Amino acid sequence: MFDPTTRAIQKVGAAILNGRNILVVRKKRQESDHYIMPGGRMEEGETQRETLTRELREELGVKVRSFEYIGSYSDIAVFEGDPLIIHAYQVEIEGEITPLAELGECRWIDAHFEQNGIKVGSIMAKKVIPELVRNGKM
Image 1 (cartoon, rainbow, N blue to C red):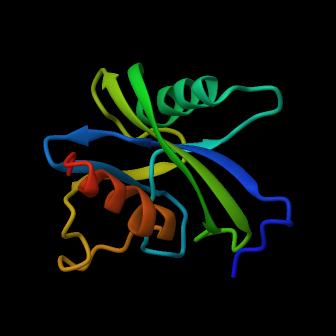
Image 2: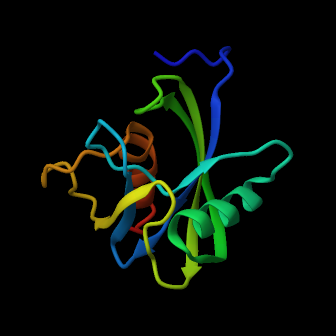
């Protein structure tokens, strides 16, 4: 169970949409078969926008064209097992998506990912995707 009094990992996540599909990524060296949102940890003194811009350039080789706040969500991190807060944004990008840095795979999924046997990190699966579905974006 998530304890809000514990210092949580702060990450910024990008919901990149293509029609009714959302981009998910998987790291090269991970034991879990879960996909997660592109994005990453905020560095000291960095704004959420700066984190989004840096992480998407480093991980996917793309530029942020625009972004819109979806919400901030907390749970336990799939990989670290620590409390996690993800500040999620719907992001429009420019450039060709290429998995770089620690990423091994990128793929597009739809709202029926569970029925298709695709595992997605808890915040994305339980919070972000349902929010995008409720808003008619997926």
